[in-house]
Image (cartoon, rainbow, N blue to C red; front, side, top):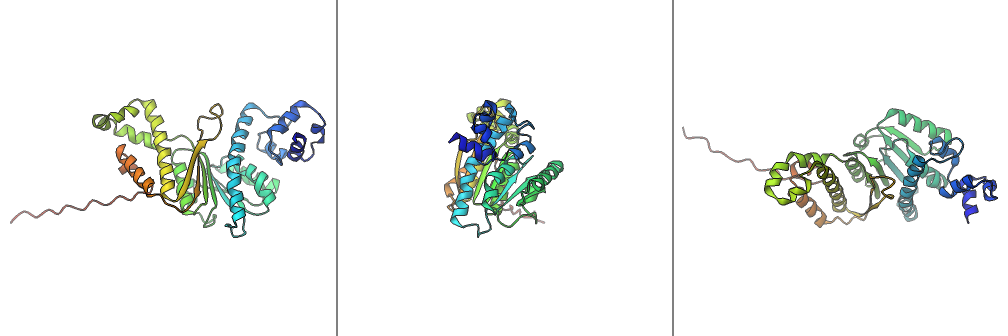
Length: 317
């Protein structure tokens, strides 16, 4: 079985299967069947000599683990015929060097024969390099857009509907922008790995003195380190409630072991159409409890009722 796996990984690995070097055999055991070695070299995951260093091994493990969650979502879409025969579409936000997009294309979209991947990235030089690499490899159903996540929501280069939205380590509010993008594009699934998150922590710091006087719960964020950690936790809880209130079934798990990445929370949302009223109520209650309603209600889909203007009688003449 291992020899068969090596063969599919290289396309010409008879030498490794026959025992042509333990280092090569060990490398091939770490790759997924069908994986292009040339692509991994172009992405600088493998060296030109075909070696895998510790940092590259960590990156590849993260992407492969994410692929294990995304592939069933794509297969379900293709099997259900909900893509209208056009093949699934996927938008990868904060794509960076597009490790995830290229490996998804190589392992899934290439053999599928249809479907499209859109990589969205703010750094123009990375977009240009990804476009050149896709052309060089003949990955014709990949597009790369030099846009922020927020800008991409109204971009004419993207279709009206995107089936799967991914955001791997999108910083701060970019994950929220990816969720907003997915909601507007009527995404069937979203796969999110949030990164650094500062917005809620900043809001907690602003009202810290008032909250300490109001409730002993404010001790949870009295110290700066706790403020940052709690802000991150609250942010992801609010995101999950927002998705559930919008009709998604949400699962939260680890991406990989903590030894590989401290930004390790994986949020998977599948659209069911069943909007949970209780989730919206809990979301609003949490915002109120932490004094975040004015700052964050709009970001998480809550519409605040306008306070009616007070009528003041004019003084008597």
